[in-house]
Length: 79
Image (tube, rainbow, N blue to C red; front, side):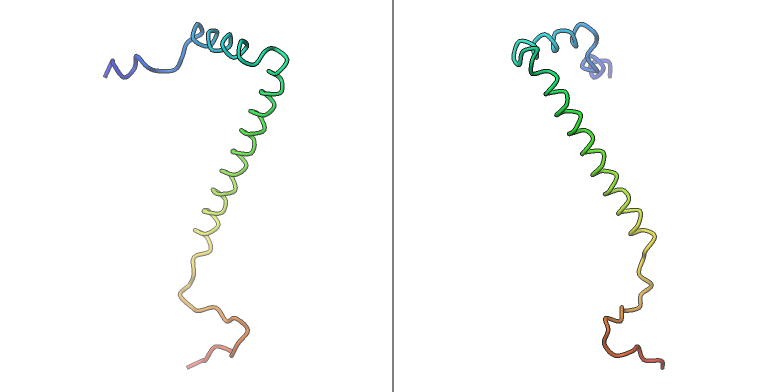
Protein backbone atom coordinates (compact mmCIF):
# COMPACT_ATOMS: atom_id res chain seq x y z
CA UNK A 1 0.00 0.00 0.00
CA UNK A 2 2.84 2.40 0.77
CA UNK A 3 4.19 1.85 -2.77
CA UNK A 4 1.00 3.35 -4.19
CA UNK A 5 1.42 6.48 -2.09
CA UNK A 6 4.93 7.04 -3.46
CA UNK A 7 3.44 8.29 -6.74
CA UNK A 8 0.92 10.73 -5.26
CA UNK A 9 0.48 14.42 -6.02
CA UNK A 10 3.64 16.32 -6.97
CA UNK A 11 5.16 18.51 -4.28
CA UNK A 12 6.59 22.02 -4.53
CA UNK A 13 9.93 21.01 -6.13
CA UNK A 14 8.14 19.01 -8.81
CA UNK A 15 5.78 21.90 -9.63
CA UNK A 16 8.73 24.30 -9.90
CA UNK A 17 10.49 21.88 -12.24
CA UNK A 18 7.36 21.55 -14.40
CA UNK A 19 6.97 25.35 -14.53
CA UNK A 20 10.60 25.77 -15.64
CA UNK A 21 10.14 23.18 -18.40
CA UNK A 22 6.96 24.93 -19.59
CA UNK A 23 8.78 28.28 -19.62
CA UNK A 24 11.56 26.78 -21.71
CA UNK A 25 9.16 25.25 -24.21
CA UNK A 26 6.73 28.12 -24.67
CA UNK A 27 8.49 31.23 -23.39
CA UNK A 28 7.14 33.86 -21.02
CA UNK A 29 5.19 35.67 -23.76
CA UNK A 30 2.97 32.63 -24.48
CA UNK A 31 2.13 31.75 -20.86
CA UNK A 32 -0.82 34.17 -20.47
CA UNK A 33 -2.32 32.88 -23.70
CA UNK A 34 -1.86 29.27 -22.60
CA UNK A 35 -3.35 30.00 -19.18
CA UNK A 36 -6.35 31.71 -20.78
CA UNK A 37 -6.92 28.73 -23.08
CA UNK A 38 -6.63 26.32 -20.15
CA UNK A 39 -9.10 28.40 -18.14
CA UNK A 40 -11.61 28.46 -21.00
CA UNK A 41 -11.25 24.71 -21.45
CA UNK A 42 -11.90 24.07 -17.76
CA UNK A 43 -14.89 26.42 -17.83
CA UNK A 44 -16.36 24.65 -20.88
CA UNK A 45 -15.80 21.24 -19.30
CA UNK A 46 -17.57 22.29 -16.09
CA UNK A 47 -20.46 23.74 -18.11
CA UNK A 48 -20.84 20.54 -20.15
CA UNK A 49 -20.66 18.31 -17.09
CA UNK A 50 -23.30 20.44 -15.34
CA UNK A 51 -25.58 20.22 -18.39
CA UNK A 52 -25.23 16.45 -18.49
CA UNK A 53 -25.85 16.21 -14.76
CA UNK A 54 -28.94 18.44 -15.02
CA UNK A 55 -30.23 16.43 -17.97
CA UNK A 56 -29.83 13.17 -16.08
CA UNK A 57 -31.55 14.63 -13.03
CA UNK A 58 -34.37 15.89 -15.24
CA UNK A 59 -34.87 12.48 -16.80
CA UNK A 60 -35.14 10.93 -13.34
CA UNK A 61 -37.93 13.38 -12.50
CA UNK A 62 -39.76 12.92 -15.85
CA UNK A 63 -40.21 9.16 -15.74
CA UNK A 64 -42.86 7.98 -18.19
CA UNK A 65 -46.07 6.88 -16.57
CA UNK A 66 -46.48 3.96 -18.96
CA UNK A 67 -49.09 5.72 -21.15
CA UNK A 68 -48.30 6.31 -24.78
CA UNK A 69 -48.07 9.90 -25.86
CA UNK A 70 -50.86 11.26 -28.01
CA UNK A 71 -49.02 12.71 -31.00
CA UNK A 72 -51.95 14.70 -32.36
CA UNK A 73 -53.75 11.69 -33.79
CA UNK A 74 -56.92 10.13 -32.45
CA UNK A 75 -57.86 10.92 -28.88
CA UNK A 76 -57.05 8.14 -26.41
CA UNK A 77 -59.84 5.61 -25.97
CA UNK A 78 -61.65 5.48 -22.62
CA UNK A 79 -62.60 1.98 -22.12
